[in-house]
Length: 416
Image (cartoon, rainbow, N blue to C red; front, side, top):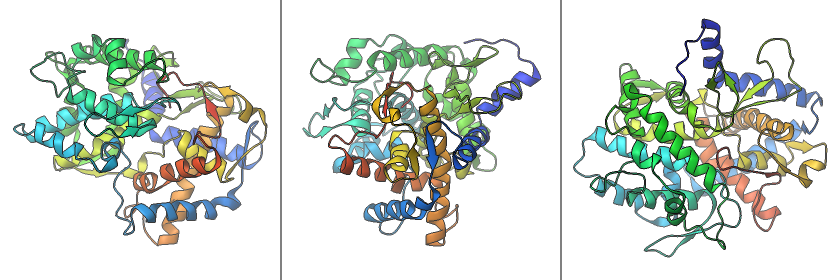
């Protein structure tokens, strides 16, 4: 990690690109171009918005008839299949203080989310004890849950229920493959990328002793830092995201930098004006926002009220983006988009993700209007859960036998 002294301008620019404001600003610019039919790969058809919102609401009511929707977070994946995994975890954490429990849950959520990039359509995980077979995000969640409980990310055999810097730095590819049941017949996309991400996380923890401790550095100690950021029992969701982005920014591989500071999930789009430095950059921070959403519940369990939930954006990943394409909100202008596999930084993927961010906001507004609810009553994080992610998966399964997204992405295990 670099600790170069930054100029005030550099500090302000980095802070901007780590903010939800920047995500909406830059994605909004591309959305305006799409509405004017001035993008290369996509155009928007907002006449489909009501129909898509109705579909998302229908899917939501099937799972949550009373519209009491929980947050879209990693914790939902740990609950699938009717198994008592979280109750089992609580039993194992019995005896810890409330803060100690929050630290352990932070350790679990952080490692699990960082392992959550797309698994591909060939991999599956057979859960020990139940024999249930899980794929994609749920499979990755349950595999990482069991790995955590088995002490795979801990350097201390006497304290298995933690992730710590040394445990992450010394994690081997064989150990990760074994934990995720990877074999020649059961291949998981981006194993090396995932391993390197966790190893870099271990390095990053040790380089930030004021946040993560000088002894037994753990990602879960971020809970202590965030408690210190609260005021009168309240904590802004954007403060959590800012802490995630500043604390873990150095781990992302091969990304754009400003003054040697890693920007993370930030990419270039040539259609944006070149009228000032960095004006063509488009931030998304998908995994970091997914992680932020997943840290809120342990913080609530400590008695904090999370405010400003709708400051964060929807997640620009292939389920939400696929929903927009499959139901016609986004129309593909160049057939090559469907014929090729794309890198995350390609112009087509940056367009797709940016338009998805703004369309998720539009869907949320439309759904609330239909229900006569406010953003406080039904924040975006609940609409995602209810919601757009499930609807995207369902429509994909109805259109393609393998349930794959409409557009294929070449993943290294660190973006999607």
